[in-house]
Length: 431
Ligand SMILES: C[S@@+](CC[C@H](N)C(=O)[O-])C[C@H]1O[C@@H](n2cnc3c(N)ncnc32)[C@H](O)[C@@H]1O
Image (tube, rainbow, N blue to C red; front, side, top):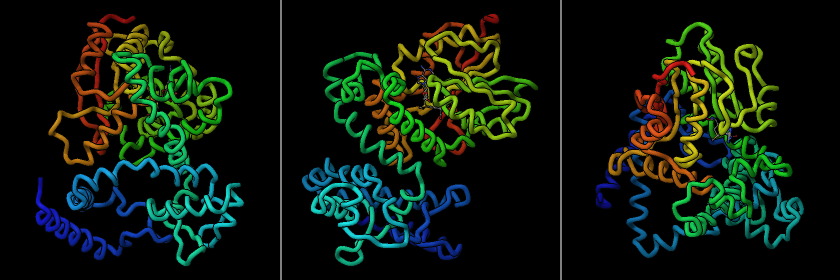
């Protein structure tokens, strides 16, 4: 582990580099003031060495911070269940929408909006300010927006994400350890923290699709759409991830579990020779996505309600694409998903998996990269009793599905620090 002097020297060097870049390019300096930009540095136009300097500062300041706390204070300050309570209240009561950005409000007005006592509201907001930069209190009793609450007020996607995190994900995570204890070795998706928390015998996806849960399904679908659009996971990254150009005129791609079809829409705009079928389980998600299709690709991107645990109805497509689908399912279920594709496959059809891949221990670029992977992995455990996989695990899935399904290659998706492309090809006869 680096010493505090090494860390602080590296922080100073990298901060100088970043500061010079911001100054020379006339860019705003880091801030949570209301005028601050959403992202400090635009990822698409910032040189990699500047992005890397920023990341290094983040890693090193966190390491320095923890070292200076020491083990006892580090533990006491890290595990704070209270941390989620203020963002939960702020999103649940939609407080960021209760007064315009740029104006001010009072605790009594916020309490009236939320329908809770002013005493409780004040405690929640003051925690949100100090713990999360949610709102600011420039003078006692006067509440204004910060850059963070401005973002929540203006971006429904991120508002949904915080609401989902502090309502659904939080309580599911709490129950996950008990689910592990109750169902050791189970690969059943309903033996999860999510199912335990919701006292249901259905998996998360089954639960959301149950009548009465429409609002929660809608929120989950919006969260998925928001996550899919993040720069490190964006649908545009799929364009260079595979040799789509090499597919023939009229070539067909089936986007299995494709949700709102954001990736297919992006690909269709770039590869005019291709046709797409986006399949998803839920009728309302599929119909909603269909109604919002961009006019220019409407003819080449079709939607279909399809349960991937039943036989694939689209026969002879060139590619069956599964993005962020297999990691939702344990091995036994993932093999069933792959087997159900087989009746659709022709000789040479490819199964293209676009998913998170866990790296070998000790090979992560830095601690934040590893932490992201561990969080992603455990999230799948919590929600669906599944988990992320290493490359070798994917190869085993293909082998278990059918010996004629041959693993071809795996590579990190260009431009993404998180997702990989894993390709298998059908070497049997046309099904
Ligand atoms: C994590 S999301 C990924 C969505 C999309 N591929 C993307 O990358 O944005 C998983 C998707 O699988 C869908 N799904 C879950 N169970 C399904 C099933 N049995 N059949 C078809 N789709 C299903 C969900 O509705 C959801 O849209």
